[in-house]
Amino acid sequence: MNFLQSHKFNTKLKNLFFCVISAVVLCSVSALNAQKKYTIVIDAGHGGKDPGNLGNGYKEKHIALKVALEAGKQLSKEKDIIVIYTRTKDVYPELWKRGEIANNAKADLFISIHCDSHTSNAFGAGTFVLGLRGNKKNLEIAKRENASILLEDNFEKRYKGFDSNSAESVIGLSLLQEENLDKSLELASLIQRNFAFKLKRNDRKVKQDNFQVLRETIMPSVLVELGFLTNKKEGKYLNSQKGQQQMAKAISDAVKNYINNLKLNTVAEQVIENKGIDIIEFKIQIESGKNKIATKSYNFKGLKNIERAKVGAFYKYYYGVTSSYKSALSSLKIAKQKGYKTAFMVAFKNNEKVSVKEVNK
Image (tube, rainbow, N blue to C red; front, side, top):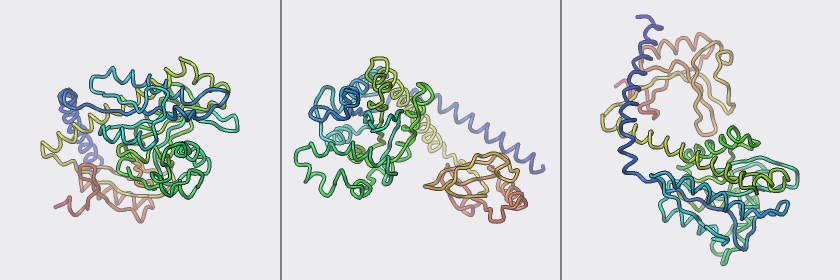
């Protein structure tokens, strides 16, 4: 059997394996649904003595609350979702209290809803996750939302050393939920995709920055900026019942999508663990860098079926993904012939990177 035939055979075998696993997973999802309840905490930003921004005479605290309640109403229709609100009326829960509500409930997700403002005619929706660094524009948003701290009783003691107007303080916030960052990014991407593609809102992307309300939580968390009240057209849309219902649905649909993915991943992991099955893959790493490159053959000296993976701040590019060590050796040879002299083989066991030597044992 030559390399091409071997590769096709391994691909078919792998596809058959995943079909079997998928069938078992789908049959197991209903059983999992009956056991697991997902708790979602929805936080309407600002409230009470803190009106938020007042662009064009609209009040951020009122719009955020209406969208939060509508999103929660839609999610509550799902049998396996429990919704908890940080506020259901015009009151101001302190930022630490919002996080405490989510932490005490052992929530699976925390979503904080806000509206943006700017001195220009900026518009569009954006979603944020907690991060240590941000550009100057994002920093201004974080500083504005964190300024609510100054309205809280005993804020000097509770947020000791934190200055909402200091870039150093904002950037210096510790990333307490680092292990949840990937999941936060996943949810944020689903929300942002709904805003941009389903509702055709101007896409301000998913970004990382330092919001105190996210820092207080210990689960995957996102902060949503629905749009700019300072933009006359967008402010009118967000203040309307139609706009609020559409934005709420975009958020709730994203949460349901996220939870469905979570269920499938959980069941798949359980099936693999219970059956004692190890999924082994060999890949040839040909490049690594901070630039995100389209995985087209013309970008990789004619090599096809390139796989891209983000690891930290870097993108890694792999060629010749296979479950056969012998096929991987052939792929490595081809990559080097194409000019990738520093290419090398890597191995993965159940999606975790391991040494090639360990796998071959």
